[in-house]
Image (tube, rainbow, N blue to C red; front, side, top):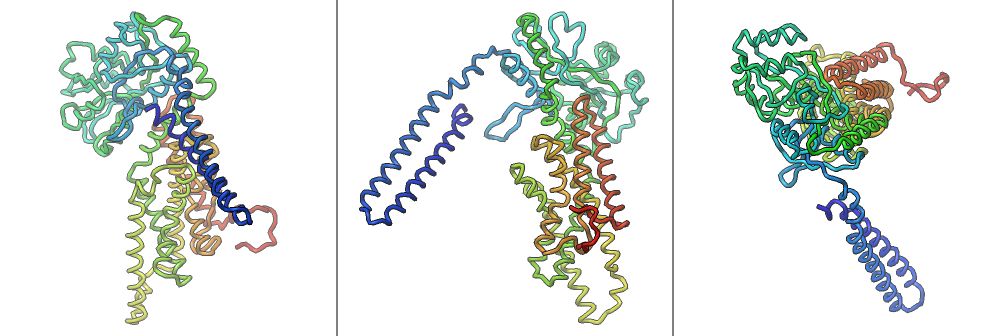
Length: 561
């Protein structure tokens, strides 16, 4: 692991440098060989240059192998604190494939960053939460994430400053008849007790409301409580009919349902309760100075923005993905792609292009901007390869329209059936419909652009968010217009200002949202309002014939093209 992680890139760079130097030496020698000087001596010079470069490469390789362990000595000598983890996506989870996995997640990354700043390094091993707490009490583990402070736990544990907040909700099946007063925990518990409701909870977990914790601890309610060791078991039990609902962190529950593809089967019931989350440290095996160092590190990370950056990298992408992974958003994207295909065929027909040229003009607006965006950010694999539905929509739409156009020509020109014009939409109607669909799609693609900027950890987000929004929203259309030799053409004018403004506003909102408790519902509303606002701006610009912003705003003598 040490070799693959720390030596692979340096050796590759040095090998590339050696190859470049060798090429330069060879090129110079070849140039000199054109002179009357003996070619044999130049051949010896080439061999000497190669041996010199290879010798340098060997020296650098040996030096790197011998010295690199010492460069990581400081990290290895940091005191180790035993910790643990359990599946709790997106806070703690394994990422990777069959060959290797990496423990990651928001809580894991926060703990690593905090402990490194405080002068320690964590060691993780998987363990159920209740057993984890027992080990903390005994002292066999020194620190753990994801802890709620209670008076009982304070007898044997220290608690750090809070590093995030948690909001608890109830998840039930969509067809569940269970109801209670919104944000009324007491009424929810009363309804549970008055019915045969089976409530799933994670063993050893402390929830945000003391009423819930007392209800779970009461032996008389044992028939209503189903305990599990790991959170994903609650979702499985709900889908299998073993429980009627379960309590969990709002982001954790939504992530589990989304990753399992069960969003149509499971829904949340809002409770309006939240609690701060701390690191928990064992009083048996940890000195108070360790707690002080950790608290200082948390304070520093909050001040310099490191904490917010980790929230942005690990929590925001998941919430945004859940927001856009909805049927209505998918239909808007598909509608936009169809409009792109129609516009491409119209242009190809006007220019009398070949079928493949027409297919190219139909394809570029749908995937071109996203492809360019992914190449800039280094996203691998690019989105169009991961999500084939975009290309399938292009292909199916193009084939359908190709058949439709040729059937129209056959009926009208070959059979002289002029009545087909009466059932065919006018050019003006088609242009309006295309612009409406295109405007909706551009507004939706604006969200996707900001999402990719967040997922790709582009920094600063307020800059790259709107730029990627423009690339995703209108980049493909601009590329198509350039290929076709058009400026604003056919059915549309490209208003790049609109996705830029919308992307900027959404990016700023997300950055401001990081400073407090993250609310998935607020982000959903922000995304929805961004789409509505962008679409409305497009409609106003189109129907009032507002021209795109020019470099020279007050010059009116030039003819607009």
